[in-house]
Length: 403
Image (cartoon, rainbow, N blue to C red; front, side):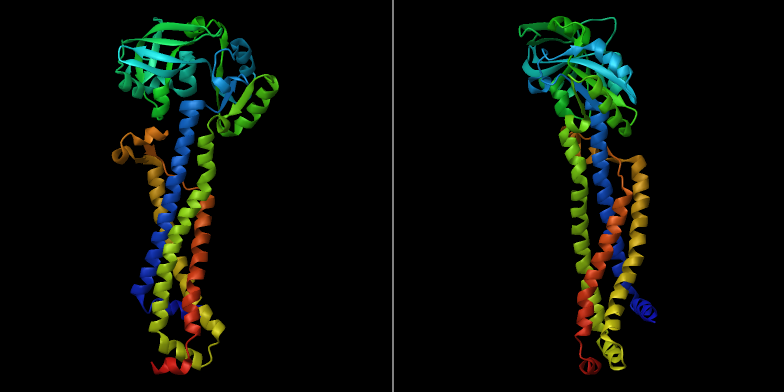
């Protein structure tokens, strides 16, 4: 009976009811879209960190990360043997790194010099796809170097130009080497591009005086679920070395992912608060317009509990209609954008790369967030209906009928 009365009351004023339904649908759609955009940006940052920067796991000497000196190294053969026996490993790259200075006629700039195996860099992070000018390492040539686009622009560097790299060797002596730029690369992290240059590992090891050694191992797994097992295995096999996951190597990325739930919930709360005021205003108007009707119902015996329930039920019904509509639009938009992506370079240019994000974001709406949004909107509708319902209860039946 109460449901029937509440349902009929909704459609006596179609415009008002449709306005509330539209506001609920818009609020749900906005909340779902913003949450999916947040998670899409988080997923993109993690993808870039793993595929272009640190991989899933890294191995160093325990003291290497204190000052990044080449003296803290390990034997390459030992690492190769251990990684071949590690479960879940897809590919790995053993590198030699040194802190130094890049100099040319335009000036000098501090850089991290990475000695790499070109084939290994292709298998772990498709490094050859980042080349935007010149070529990747030519196996027929020696003393080649790859520099980032941001550093190239800053130092006026171009393919074919010569530079001098200066650094400390394993004995803490100053060493220098002349290299020719074979290519300019650009990743999704411009600050890292400015600080890193890449040379052949064999040539760098000769200058450092540490043949057959390396300072860093980057390991790419088949999937995220394989990390824990490989981490435990390598820590057991290499007790004297430090084995860390990407969450430890790139704590800022881990922080972004761990804060997504809180930040997205805050956005949802802000949206539903605005929605609550709209519901309160509209339902209060509906109660005041029906003052004589409510007074009549009270005079013929409708209890306050049933009257309260009628107003609350009307609000809940409108919310239950608006929620599926809003999620229908959100799901449709999310399905389309999750495949085509949102190209932010049209708006922000290369600004996203300054923060380590790709230009194209693919929205992602986790299932648990859908239930969170529905629950939040439902609770908000219930709370928003309390004041209009209380206003209806405060009416005097005799005075209400006279109006």
